[in-house]
Length: 157
Image 1 (spheres, rainbow, N blue to C red):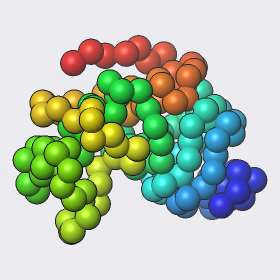
Image 2: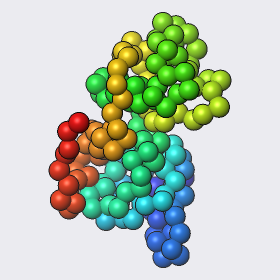
Image 3: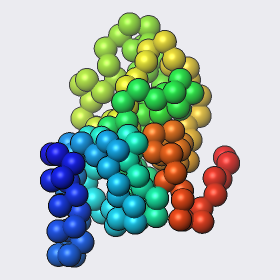
Image 4: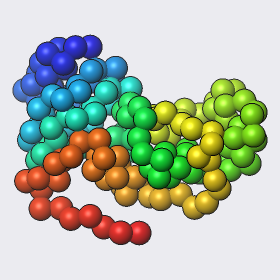
């Protein structure tokens, strides 16, 4: 879906009182300032550098399912831990993958919990952060300024 098609979908969904379907939309750099994205399907949508200041966002888990690509090493490690915490075998499967084994989600009946470019060499077992904190970290890194007009301030864990 092109950026123009996605923006039309957001407008139509708001006017019609339904949730926007932005699956696979390329929204890189698009201005969605003040848009209502609650309930929007963001699976595999590319939101990097999107202007989200004042936007009403969907659940943090949905934000994490947008496609974020390569993120910083620290964030990659934290997102891999979140993916592991959401996997039925967990960190054991990810440790085997890091040592050259198959992708933990290749034969798993569950979808990944976050959509980013994983890096085997960065895997290290550890506790997972909450979905809200990870979504904030992803948005801070990939969509600077998203907190503008919200009055929100970062919360530590």
